[in-house]
Length: 350
Image 1: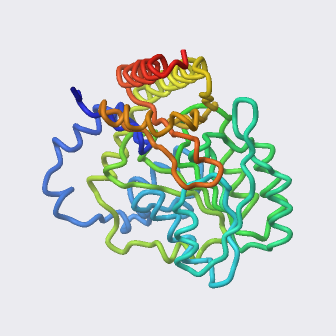
Image 2: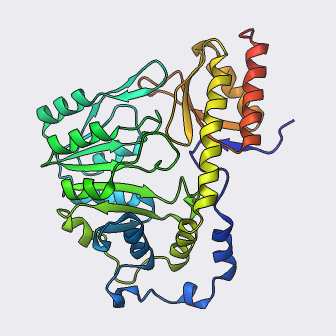
Image 3: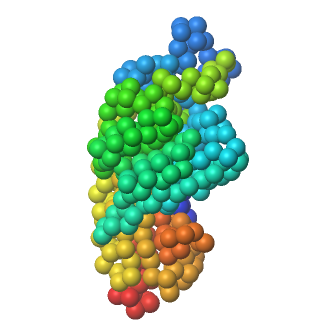
């Protein structure tokens, strides 16, 4: 008998947003719903860009909003990648990177993500060598990377930025905030590399995927993108107010973040006890796991039939025997652990 379905396959934050975010929805009136923003009259893009500039120490004109970070990513590629030019992306990464390059008739080249004993790593030397060979217009770095969960350390990131000073670099930090590698000094990075785009979103850490608000920090040499993304009538006033409420709720998100760090280790240890399973460490809100090839199809059928949905990769290089597990609540995680453990026992793996 299937109980309530649990979706752990799209990297959403299953704890949901802070209570203050719901209060914004309950109290929204005609001003937020029926009238355009007038923030431009004060010389700023919006209340949200003004707040982000203050919180992160970045000049407000260098804060860029979009319909999720996906929107800003697409804006950047469409703005700067010309037909025939090269874009570098991680070898194990979001399929959408290739898709948006193809829309511009760009050439996509992959630099390696290397599996280690318990985590994936960036091949920085290979990235730089590929950049020297292909002379890309853009380099895309995902940190933490989806689906491998690893981050690019501050030292390596600084080296890439210095050596590729004439290249547009997109640093996709959609999964920022879930713990792991220390945060790079954003202002220093932006000032050091005027062609750097740092993408973030309210979808993941702040559990607000449904309101579609992304933001970016832009280097001073990206005025073309600033102009392309400008909004004469402003942004969604309701979405902005919800995002501001999230920023005001730091204690709530810090507690959820601590819980997720502990839960990742609980899942990793539980599954790594099963022969043929290997769960990699992750700085994001998901875990990549290798599963026994002979049991992969049966495992998917068992979990699907139980109303537990995780991401099973198919026909993807290096990931054919892998799954990606989005963190759920403690109760959802425990349900998944029990289901996989029961499957392993029934198959004679334990």
